[in-house]
Length: 437
Image 1 (cartoon, rainbow, N blue to C red):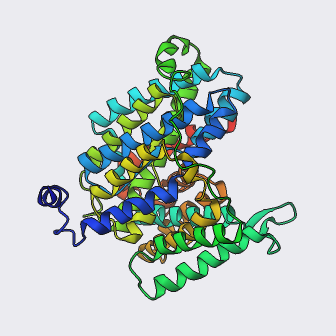
Image 2 (tube, rainbow, N blue to C red; image 1 turned 180 degrees about the horizontal axis):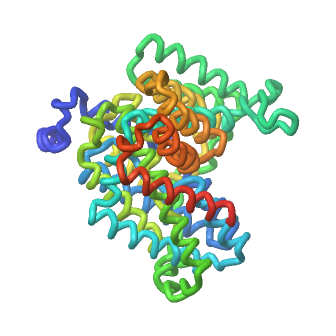
């Protein structure tokens, strides 16, 4: 059995071990386990049953991770995407006063379109058409984005009316957990200790439990909540998609998920060293995996599923094969029954890991041709746009709109791939839709 796993996932060829891959999968899961609790909270605001969303989130995430690992053989995990779930609940359901049942039908329709364009390799063509410099900028931008998430979740950076953002209060005890974890993890990484990120997370959680800053679980096991309130609801309400406004909602679900996932896949592939000749091997299978998970999620009862930037934590630990993603998927299934225990993994525990991974991903900036202003400007807008707009797709939009303009100004318009010109107009329309949302 062990030999079959080794051969299928090419463990030896990729210079890794089964033990390291499982540790990487566990690290990725710990880094993104928060979605099991955050997603029900966000979608619950639209009126959806939180228990059903919890179970749907776990199952859709597990399916996506296992497909990504087995079919595409990448150490990349999937789950309902942050940001698009907020758009679902607050913009569509609350802002536009569209029932959550209809919004879920919109996700179902968008996922069907997703699968069709994936089968015809349109998504793959677009990803391959993106210039190498912009791919490096996307990778680094995601690093800045998740580091910003970590700094905010850990309490080190907070909102400030005078300066937009500012340093958090050091009088908050839990913030010191983040500081402890960041210092310890930094030392372990500098010393090149294997599994340093995971060790830092574990030590921070233990310190939180010992000091009482993290409340211990009241029980170890609980039954998974029923899916009945959300299962197949989107399919049954597909006939509700009968107005221009609702088709705009479907298109927005499609565009945001498309470029969030594409950007994340490219960024993670850059980090792990998978890119070859500016192309991502087996990208078609990776895209089909997340498309299928998105479709399943809409049937089960959750917002769009996409690749997760937290996969970078597992990659940083050494995950290089699909076994990492499969491990994460299995843990999502187990997570349904051990939900009380997962409450130990607070934002302060995961924040240091996100910050350090941000450092690792930001190293791709050195590959951008900063001496060429026609490249530097769109690359910089991608880099700065992701954390400040708090959105991967918004950052990509800023860069992709600017890129053809700067290239034409540099009299290099013929070097721009026709698809990039097409994306120029797509993203202008995309920004227009968001402005109306």
